[in-house]
Length: 239
Image (tube, rainbow, N blue to C red):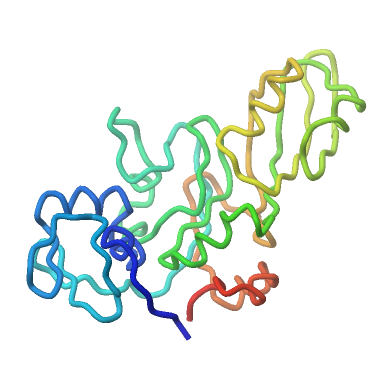
């Protein structure tokens, strides 16, 4: 059962999966959003999404159908809906397949690998909440030789030194928090530059044989198997 409650108008539109929070704020301030037929320009106006009629550009704003995908982010694209600098985004890659989906967390421009995109904002918030310690696994290549002692001292949930030489080292790193550029900063702190970074797993979901730029649908049952601890949370995936 989905609980109701007052939330800021911008967040309500984001929860419906039709606009990001930033896009909703912009649309509201531009007078493009109506609440029960009246234009509202305050993004912080409290509303109960389930009890008001919301419209954007004259079109009713309804919750998007439940949908979640796994996407292999290629190198050189950004994890935003639009980029002020004109760089290619994950939504440019996905095209209409990305309509209504929000990215769960981010990968920086030079990183590749697994992204979850969903219409389920409760799921997105649960996965990204540090309190839930959802594991994220990365395959990392760095310049120079990382010794076993240095690898063991890295502030990560788990580090596996797979191969090392004077030229470069290959590691598997598991984190339970998704801070921006955390792995790059971690290795910079011990004098090693990250040259390749690929996320291969989030919780129990793995990238498998997805090629860069490819995606696949996942079901609620697959999500529950991959994040069993979410069943104990009030922010479990909505049904």
